[in-house]
Amino acid sequence: MTIPAQPYPLTGRSFKSLEKEYPLNDPLQKAIIDQILQSHCDTPGGLMVILNEIQSRIGFVSQPIQEYVARVLNTPVSAIHGVITFYSFFTTEPRGERILKFCMGTACYVGGTPQLVDKATQLLGVSPGQTTPDGKITVEVCRCVGACSQAPVVVVDEQMYGRIRPSKMPALIRDVLKSCEDASGG
Ligand code: FES
Picture (cartoon, rainbow, N blue to C red):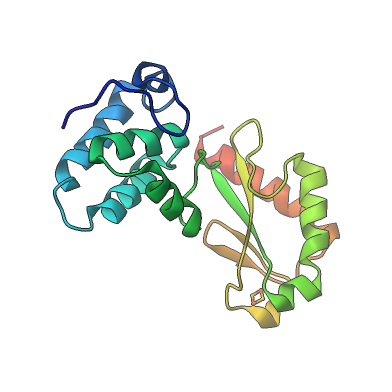
């Protein structure tokens, strides 16, 4: 596995400058990425395995990581970028400690999800796809989660909450923040 010295196609920046970006500048995380690449670089169809493992173990596949993987595998970075943007499982930024998902399936949408998202945005100061500056909560929207009779549905990590009204959002967010504190022993 060799790293060529030329600039990367998307950014035009050198490997050295990309290396400065987290987690490529973190020796432990970079070692994880290199180990994943070493294990699967010769596997047919290994790209999905590699990207899945990076997502699971690092938590995201940022643009510098995509370019690094592309260069090592000698694959067009556009192909990797296409996979990352097609599957919602992948994220390009670190997620927060808790994921607050708002179901945007038809029943939930009609049942009031847009108002819930507005309320959460107002309370947390971040929009869907973003994470609070303290790294605690990521707000996302998702497709139907199969609990339409409970619409509108909010999912916190794996836990579903049904028939949520905007007036219930402050308490729900307080509980989520408290669970972060409890988990960190604070
Ligand atoms: S539309 Fe939200 S659970 Fe089905």
